[in-house]
Amino acid sequence: MRVKVSRRAHFNAAHRLYRKDWSFEKNERVFGKCNNPNFHGHNYELITSVTGEIDQRTGYVMDIKDLKDLIEEEVVTAFDHKNLNKDCPEFKDLNPTAENIVVVIWNKLRKRIKTELDLEVVLYETPRNFVSYTGA
Image (cartoon, rainbow, N blue to C red; front, top):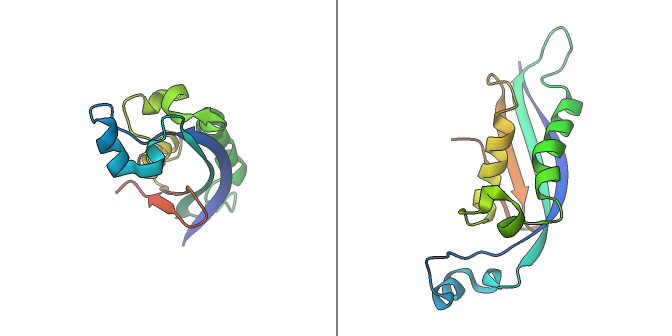
């Protein structure tokens, strides 16, 4: 029997969408307001889900406290109240779009979660705009 367990978290961060190799005008055309040279911020909501077999000894797929701690260490501590472009080495040469952020988060968590468990990360940039990644 496979069960999915999920944990919700949030972090606040600023970013700017732009490519260093493009002109300001091209960045403005492609990224619009998100290309603001003074950056802009989001209140990100994160849902991390782990799916697997229930351990017959513990009754858990994964201890939800362990998942909470991983998210805190790998995501919240790294990104909360940060400028993703300037403060986070993961985005030094990677445009911090929601799509790229969710893949970075998934990769950070995947390294710390048992391989037999499936991992899905959903990232809400706004209440209506969100992305998800399962490693596929």
